Image (tube, rainbow, N blue to C red; front, side):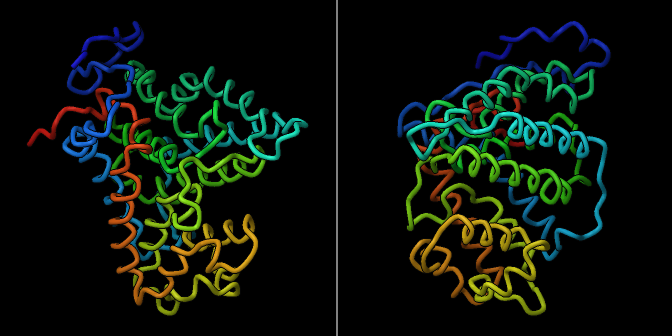
Length: 323
């Protein structure tokens, strides 16, 4: 474990980071399929899935319009995402022969690549400045691939890892849970949809009609949790246009469905077969449990997704340590 690779910058002496942590630049550790065992046994896997499930519990039965606490750190994260959104407006797509993968995305991405540490430094207090280079890597990994101009669930996972790291260094706290999903992650989704639309990004590793969705997975998990024990909306209603139009502003799951119907043509059962099948499940809690199982199997246990994930001191590859 190359623990001491990074020297903390001088201004971090104001107050020592938690437990005199040696922050390191995260790097890839999953190089071959047999390495997947290392990931599944890792502290990173346990912490990541624990984070996803904690948030899943936190938003259960709550609307997006629910009143919740918004801390300064949450406001700063939203401001960071607003900056990324503004850069899209400042980087219009270029004329090119190919319909997909507009090359202007690379210009947009280069700006993020250059500014990521400065952006993260606006969210992280100065006594934790040593953590910025490590945490910023996850932000850069969360917006798609600039070579292939594609986006998929591995990029989405990097954003969840970014938020998980901010929790681990104490920037985000337990009482930020609802705002993490409803305010920060929801804003992230809006920016990603704008990127996908503006630059006609390709889905990364899409399973076509057999996948849940071309681009996202987590909003379906958390969005189904929001709908648990809903007085009248049942899983069968999300394929009903009227129900979606009337309720999408309150529920992440329905917002995802709306985006799919805007982006795809033809019968829903044909372009989104997996979701169509899910609409036959009797209850939202069963949908939620099934999606968590599916997320583990289709995303977290798939080498093409996990090979890109990076590991550092906050999400370490070493086996789970008890305590």
